[in-house]
Image (cartoon, rainbow, N blue to C red):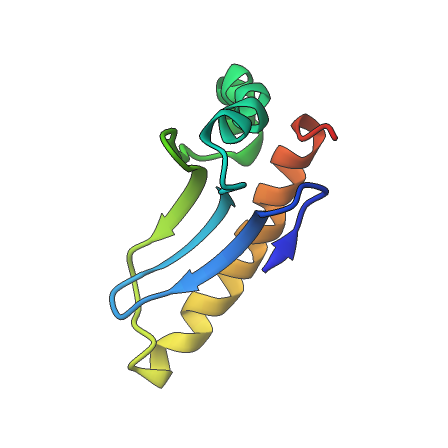
Length: 105
């Protein structure tokens, strides 16, 4: 997890049995506040996708988030770990670099 300047708005690296993803997850406990934090990101969506270099998955609702999913690999197979870890870490840092300019306190 990489924290942001907001409480309960963090970057995550998530590994499941079938995939791996990097994401920012916005859950302040107040859906209105979540939307306020998410709005500058949403308003700059095309620029953020362009800067990231790939299409991201955007979700707005009670909680909000932006993620990049990697479909290959499984934590259950140690041989998959090297092909999963490096790209995901690189993309987590890249995601943070693309989004942080729009996260104003």
